[in-house]
Length: 229
Ligand code: 6PG
Image 1: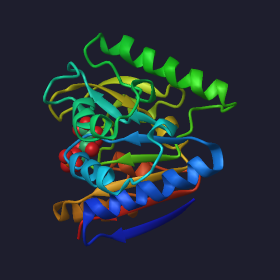
Image 2: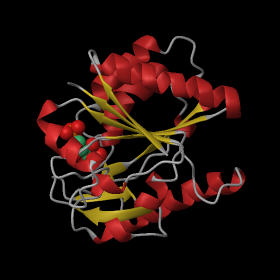
Image 3: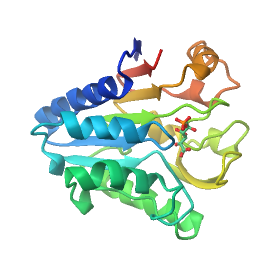
Image 4: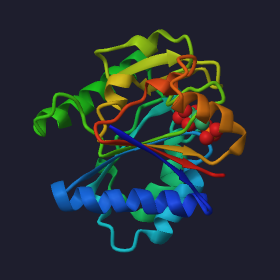
């Protein structure tokens, strides 16, 4: 696994270009681009740039998953799906069947099991031991969390399940999250960190500081960091 650190001048544009380059490569190689989306504040601007730069990208050949979701309905202001629907799926005309939504509106354990089964069905069809993202986008929390894998959570040590219900300190507390086995099965991971205030956390993660859950992230081919400073 190789890592690279990229310093962006125009964060959203450079993130979009990074994603689109890997999308075109995956579609050319396998006829499909499987992209995991992150939650938080970074996606909206990146999605706007994706829409403006996508050109003739065949969206029906892109399959979307979510690294995590808050346990709220899809129209709720805190919903990661809502951000993606408003700023990406809607404007791009992404077919509904291409979006794997974590159902935050139902019982968290049931939603996690449902998502696990949805990903397993694709993995089985494609002959994979585990669903394999072409690119998984991750934000980085002030405590070094990724997705909804927070420090000291029992979910950090999950080594079988791909998706779990979790409780976290960042509101809203009840969430559904990918686990490290699924995250680390990705061909590539891109950390999106626009905020220079996280400079020290980024350094700690790259140095492998075990206090930060993000230190456990790996990828089959490459982990990249796009930094907004
Ligand atoms: C979530 C996110 C979470 C987020 C980080 C960074 O649903 O809250 O998936 O992991 O990416 O907390 O969030 P910001 O980019 O908003 O700081």
